Image 1 (cartoon, one colour):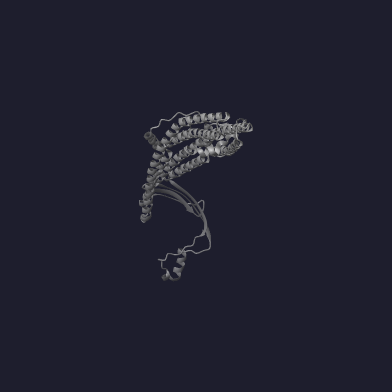
Image 2 (spheres, rainbow, N blue to C red):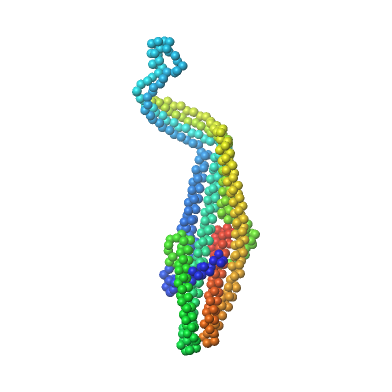
Length: 452
């Protein structure tokens, strides 16, 4: 971000429109803390991640059901005939007509139908399934922890975006002041050139050059005004995107300079960074998935019991009850169970490697953030000195020109140096605040606001 400011400066010299008389009175004042609060409440990335956490919590609730008994109640009714055939092992042919009559007793065939009523209540409780239920539950809990860490990651990312956007708006305001001052100076130069040209002290080309410089400052101001509005649009989007950019930002308190030890910062980042914690939880979930997949090799032991009523009339429904145990073992589950187990192991190894990669990335990010922050701190004083020198150079050039000793080119060059030095100081201050925010985020600190 340290080299990103020239784009902001070029696009932002426009806050003069916002700094015009009455603008501050009309727009509402927005502090950095207020901007962060709005983002925490309205940014869709945060609300979406919180809903994902809610979904993960419901999945955990569902995973507990494996530890609970399964109770099934059933009611049944049907209208059906009651026909039956004689058993095939009974041979009555030797008895002639008597045998045929006796067969009618043993079998029945009639179009008459009857009510058939039934009711039952049964329960089963898994006693042990060799980790199937346990693994599923542990995986759901670990994924819930990962989702919780994802919320924290999203919040930190949004906070950083708001801080960067907020200081972007502040930077545009400062650049606009510089643009306003540049235009004022160009108008003064044009007035001096005309007076001296009319008096015959200067050539008419000085007037033409001054008019060209003034037109350039007008063009820069127009671009800056658009850039200033874009900076506010970016801040509004970071806060949740309600489309209201009628606000004025204020300078937060100047934060203290951080004294950071790189090695300690890396260790703090690995302990605090929520995305590192999230991936660690996903590794745990993958390990629980291995346990659940491996359980398919083994049987599941459950206790069962129930009672049932069945008959033809409501007032005549005899009951039966039962208790027992079941041991279910899919003896042909070897191939799919082995494939599922190996898949779960591969997923776990992939996540472990991703965790290692993230650790390397965090270490590099923190080290870079420390170096960038230290550079940003060191750039402030040279930028101030450069601006002071540019001011003196411009004052000397203007004095020489007013006295008739210098040229319009000398004044224009001095003016360009002043504009560049002003933009450089504004950029250095912007880079310092954003570098500080990036460093705190890289270290995993929850509060990356500058009021530290």
